[in-house]
Structure formats: structure tokens, C-alpha cells
Length: 283
Image (cartoon, rainbow, N blue to C red; front, side, top):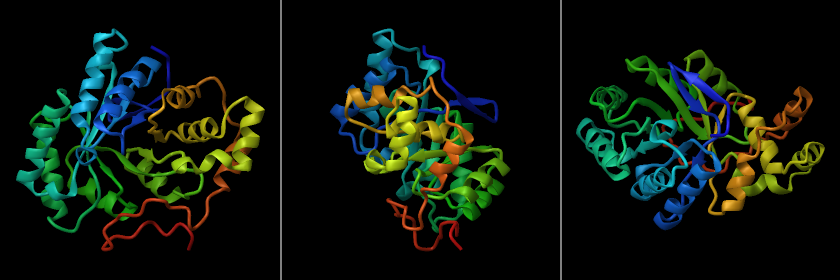
């Protein structure tokens, strides 16, 4: 196994580079998860709403059968969909997700914040799922800072991460600081801005200095912030490229240049309930 950095939250080491499966069909998800584990990834992310949990589990079993990895070396994340936030619905989906995967997930996330049912009911049920052994750890996805803090105040267990959109075009200073404050972490979805970073002049210039691509520079920028990144691809060559980021380091000046690429209109996927508001980074 290739040595790679991890962030330790509440005693759990989470690999900083993972492989995402959003928008991958079951057939492609199975192939790519097995290939990602062969390449060296040790963190796999899926969700009930992706409709590929069973295929992700099959891909993991394929990699184990090929002796590429042992189950205990994989960090596996899935998510509770918003329609299942009531106590019975959440526990039912947690059981179904574990059955579909064929493995107990290491991390179970709430996919988006919702006003109903109450945070108290949903966080209580999420803690109950952990207590019942349906997941090792729990966390959030797409929660702004205020809701992140409130959720942690209602949770007996540590919420080990908040998975949100984050890339060079999106400023996330307050949320990153909130995660540190709470003893948690940030996981970046769409870390490559859905491919928009490929033609960025600044990222390519920095990349040339290191013999790396704009994508590799971007992923390195994230993990140097201790942010977990979960790039997704359907191409084996791209997955190999994204994994090849552990043999160089960005300088403080290069990190600052990448931070400076953020812009107010940088968010690409805004599906948050209108009752909630993202942190006001630009006010």
C-alpha cells in the first residue's frame, strides 16, 4: 500500500485522498472502485441517492479478491438521503445501505440539512445508528457553519466531517475554521470544479514548475489544508493521475495564489434548502 496522508478525527484516521462515485452508473462504479483500490486509494465515497451502493460493495469485494487491499484498510462512506431523516426512516436506510454495500460503512453522513423533521430527531437517530453498529462514525454533508455547530451540539458522538463543495474558485474560510473549532474536518466534493480547473492559467503555471497537471496541483492544495478530497472519474488514467500527488509540495506562496482564485460566483452545485444560507464569505 502506498503511504499517504490521513487526518485523525476522534481517533479515526481518514485518508485525505478518496475516490468519489457520484453520477457513476453501477457498472462503471464497480469497475472504477476496484481500479481505484488497485491504484492505491483507500477511501471510497458513495450515497444511497447515487443508486450504486451495491456496485461499490462489489468493487470493493473484487479488489479484496484480487489481493489489492484488505477491508480494514478501506475508509468507506455513504449518506442518508433527506427523505429518510425521521428516526424510523433513517435507521431503515442505514440498515439497507449496509446490506447493499455488504459492509458496515466507516462513516454515515446526513446528505443535506432539512428543517423537518427536527434536527433533534435526525441527530438522535444518526447517533442511534452508530450505537446499533450500523456505522463506525457519523457526520454531515452540505451544512453551513451555523447548522454544523447546532448539529454538533445535538450529537453525543463527534461529527467527524462535513462534506461540501470546495475547490479553488470557492472561498470556504469560515467553514474550514468551524470544522477545526469543532474538532472535525472538511471533505471536498467536486474538488476539481467539475473539470473547470483544467484550463486555469495559474494552476497550469504552478503545475509546470512541479511537472504536474492543474488537477494534481488542485488536489495537492486541498490536502495541504488537511481537507479531504474525493475526486470522481470514469477513466482509469485520470484516477491514476489524481492519485499521483504525494511526491511534491506546494509552497506557501503557491497556496496563496490558488486561494486568490476564489470568486463570489464560484459555487457550482447549490441545492441547499432555501431555509438555510451559506456562510457569507464575501460580505
